[in-house]
Length: 271
Image (cartoon, rainbow, N blue to C red):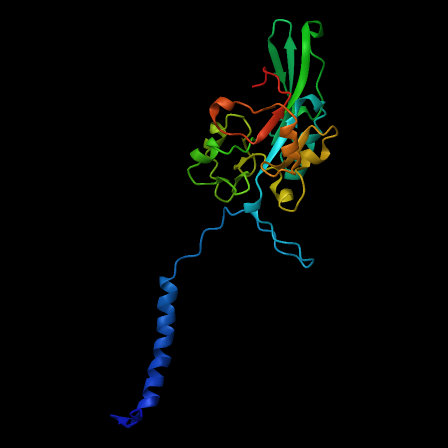
């Protein structure tokens, strides 16, 4: 039987112990909270679309790995992709800033190539100056290649540029200090400094659309189906079929950046 004799001063032992516990409990809880590890930094986590009232499952970036295909033979240089990109992503409307654009390559009889992209191809292309000496011409859409080994991520001093689990290279504008290191490191000329926010900007594959099950705006508006978006490794993906039935090339393969923008019918003059 527990000793219930009164403590000195006439206080009941059981009441004394209860009072001690009541005083100590908050102190123990406070110490435990201080010792607990800080919550992980989720600033660079891919957006997780919350489960809606309809029961739509959350978006899990670990189950996806995205890329894009471009069939050069289908591109007609209409520039709708560049216009749609600007409208979708609030890109400045001036002729100097683009997340995606279209270049025209004109191959001359002397095997030299001239390349132009007036206003990113949005307003069309003027006739070549010397049409008589032209052997062929074609259009090549350009954008960030969302490299698996991206040099832009390697050089960013603050970690603002990062790769997501689903294979997209993004820029966290709240971290970006506008140092331009990533712009200089990109071998594809796909980045620019936003004239208002002074942060690095680039193609994001319209990531805000992708996590909702939609395709990028440039893919949606292309009238000839020159652009294909999908999963790199999934057998049923449109991109997988595109790569299976075409001779695929990537831009500047010697740099070992492992681009995830795959070109079909790409001319050797393209750089």
